[in-house]
Image (tube, rainbow, N blue to C red; front, side, top):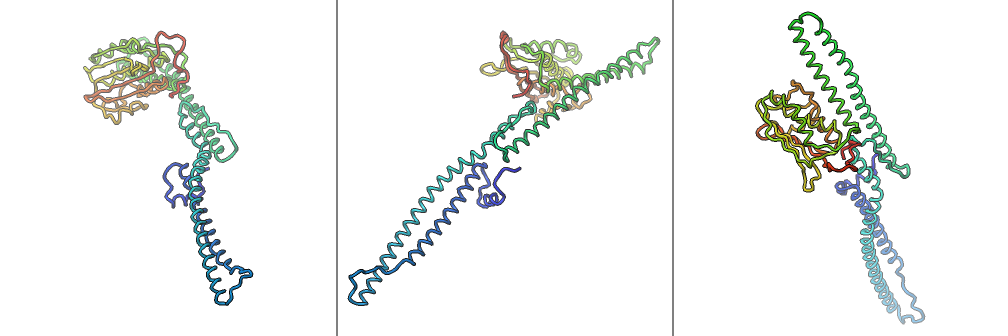
Length: 417
């Protein structure tokens, strides 16, 4: 059901040039306009009635016992009295019209204030609904408007929005559950296929070269599918928003572990680690598994999409005047990227550039997983193309005191606020 003035009043509002502005302003202007038109009409009617009444009531007064001596004197006296009565009535009519116009002007101002107040009271439920709906995100679909009051049109609208939110919540939950269940169930046939492949290769006797080559390719594809399923599981877990392994973590240590664990890959590609700085105060609160995955993914991305003989820079530092946040900054060399399209890298299966065509070993979910985990920990992800080629990834998370033991940020909900 649409909320607004009736169709005829809406047409009047448009003809009067009141279409712009807020609904409260339009309602107030409409109230004042209608009051002004009604008041002007009443004032005109009163003026006409007063003018007609004066003419019909102009009669010669009773001269009493003092009668003029002649008919001429009597007629002159009557004409003089009629003229005086006409002048007095005209003066009185003008005074009435002027006073009524002043009163109408005052009432127009009062009606504008009353109209503004009444329109605000009438539209208040809609403002509450708009603010509540604006706060609801994909991570807080469990919230409802829950507007009380009588069963009017506003209540019906609120109930309809609540029903829509309920259907959306059910749809999102079903989608996440399907991804998690499908990813989990598909691991069984993958394990069976990998075991069958190992059994076939372990049979006595020489293995033909073509068979060994084919087996290696199949194993590589199985590993790729397994990584993809693992990424789906991580995404589903992140979107579900419940972390069971939350702890205080040194962000610099996570980055160092990611670099150390990939030393062979870095050496194989001839990459140089230009910088590896870490702030000892860069402590965060969150899931050990997921934040470790964040560090692993950004380092993997810097290695996989780098030029041979390129470089990598990793820095962890406190951000802000009060050090209320910490940042993990990973920069790398590589091809020149379009900054207008770099933000797409945080979307699933999005790649840019010649080496980001989907033909590599990555799942295409690396940075999208980083974005989801960062958002679940109330942080931000910033992707910047470097002018001379490569990418700069900045992950900013809320800082926590590494020595604290009692309190920690609420990451159990995993909802971005």
